[in-house]
Amino acid sequence: MTAERSHSASSAGHPRTAPSADGPGAIVSHSASSAGHPRTAPSADGPGAMVEFADVAFAYARPADRRARAFEFPGLSFTIEPGEVFGVIGPNSAGKTSLLRLLTRVLSPQRGEIRLGGRAIGALRPWELARDVAVVPQEAPRPFPFTVEQLVLMGRYPHGPRRFFEDAADVAAARAAMLATETLALATLPLDRLSGGERQRALLARALAQEPRLLVLDEPTAHLDLRYQAETAALLRRLNRERGMTILLVSHDLNLAAELCDRLLLLRAGEIARVGAPGEVLEQGLLEEVFGCAVTVDKSASGRPVVQLAYERG
Image 1 (cartoon, rainbow, N blue to C red):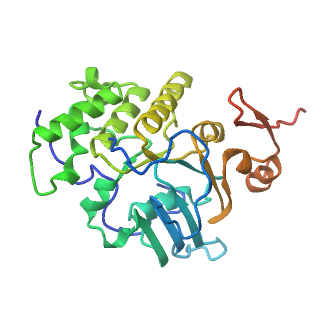
Image 2 (image 1 turned 30 degrees about the vertical axis):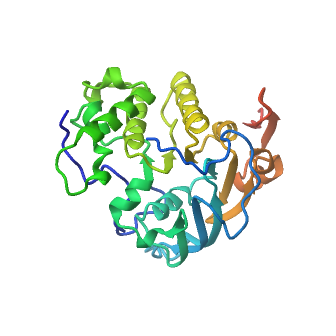
Image 3 (image 1 turned 180 degrees about the vertical axis):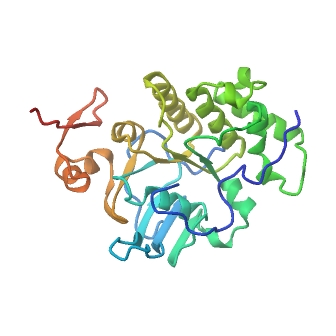
């Protein structure tokens, strides 16, 4: 099962020129608390935190149109606990993708520090960061002339950056990742022949093959129909509850975030509007202020908030 190696197998790597503001395995965390239950918010200094943003500031270059406002983070401070499902939500251009780029070192902070397990990410080599952080993008590039098995084996690159071929441990990790995501039966199929839901599971399998401490998902249910949204949500819930995996979820789907996440961070124009349990963050007045539209907030069968637009009738 030989796969062609790719230096783009992990999204964690060298800093690059700043893109526009609008763009963009599981290893068990032995210190994880019971997954799937609300947790007390960690203290500001974040002892034992999986991720800590400490007064992180960043700004894009000012646009050529001087009337346009340059996006910036004036100073982000928050933590993510081991074993937690942490959601980042907010309107377009609030900074969700930029936050992920800072965490994965695509962008570099202009002030402050980002720590992973107590270590500054700036001190980590690219493959060291990729061993700890795996990113599941919204989509794989097209065309992508690889099979599912080859894609998943690419997730093993950070564990042997100077090797060109996988070993028995890589093959075993890839097989375990495909079993966990129910993609083993798809192993020999080209990625371009898969449905949207199958492609998303294959991308997740590659991330699990990295055996990271932190799994980062960027809009994991974007472009998926209801069935595949439900399957993806169930898979993430199982990974968190059964393996204690720490998950960072970025989503426009407020109801998915409410159901899956222990805590939410609501961004507004580069600043934190609120951090807390879903019931504390998804409040009608706050959401209307941040998103600029009328909403209603009810309760689901699980007791979590359900947000709906309050459409005006003509």
